[in-house]
Image 1 (tube, rainbow, N blue to C red):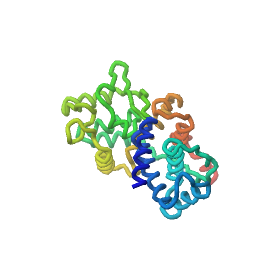
Image 2: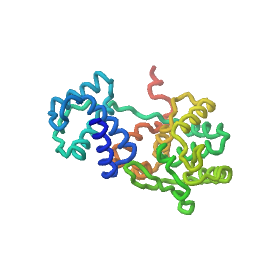
Image 3: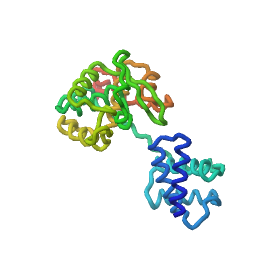
Image 4: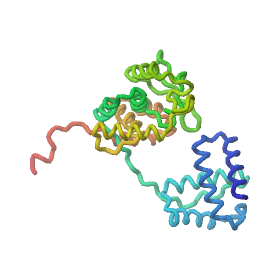
Length: 278
């Protein structure tokens, strides 16, 4: 009962702070774990060793990865400051090092095959919009008709932290979107679900992409976010300034965008330089 009350209060505090719905959901589940772990203790009186013990439990008993541990620390920091009204004093907690993984990028040809094998105009519109605008799946499904400006060829996107940005609208994408609109005539959201006016679901987007990838014969593991990664990498390969790519993606730090530099296709060197003597 006490846990439910504190979690509900924490959710209210996060709403007042204007955190995104996704962050609120994630932090709430993390704090529920936290409160259940300390069910026999007063959370107002926990010390540094108690907090470390909880992190150890998450790693050893629940097999949490470094990213999840960082999320838990962020949740606890907000819970302490917003709900418990206690200053967060555990800035030196040992945090597992995040393993740097380069995202998967597919070729322009593979993207075209995925789009070309898709006959359903709604599905085709989803794929081409994901790739040519670089939006996240959540951003895609939040799009409304009024977010598109065909005069300036740009799209207004509601991103992380409820911050708006603009990304580019391609002529080919606009052409497919117009064909889709004529056939489906969506209301409210650009991509409606089965229930009129409701958003298309993320799981539906994942399923239709999985089928299209298989049909196209693309052997790489392609997820929805792969389209965003490919968008960024292909722009850089085309000579677009990295700061522009950063702004189109909605990254707060250029460091986040810099990883795409390592994904660019290497220049054609002709004959391998080692072949002359091997």
